[in-house]
Image (spheres, one colour):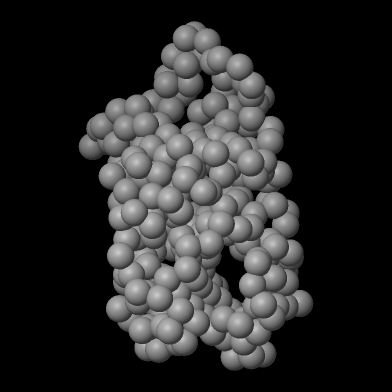
Length: 261
């Protein structure tokens, strides 16, 4: 199962990052656009953007699907407040809520779009159960999420310094399938790695902080990290530096299209 994330801290972390998020979220946008391009539907009356963040995809979903209602839901109130102020889309409901306990009626949504959000869920069976409950029969759940090999370079570098969990851990391909199987029919589930390159390590760590996705898992270290340990971590990461002088950061991305039978 997924790592035990602390939801109040998740909400707080992403709320703090609302203003900076869009300026550093190039990868997140690229993954979301790829997910959007996989959408086969051209219209839907009720659509939900689950984990909408800053609302970047709200106008794109509106343009492609022309919904009578678009529900943009996120756990982070700060993200929603920012989205309300910056995205002007018709027929949109901005809703603060938990993906594992959706504040929506049964059989009320035709399509759920969710890009890089469900990896923060504590119990994926609860998520898929809720998605199946609110979807209309024949409705689709289109999502992207992160796999356990995400940022393995960061994790391995820290493992040479101490035994704390410095990198969020995400669910495996097999567990993702297993969690969804009782509730939804799998139409497709694919994996596409993404590689980001940086001149210096601070480029990666600053970016993670800017999107609110730095380590917020339950097993992380509390307290300050000493300068000596930071230096040891940087030296350990250096072994991943490529021949072209760039430091890599790998993301393992899953794309899914599931349907309610």
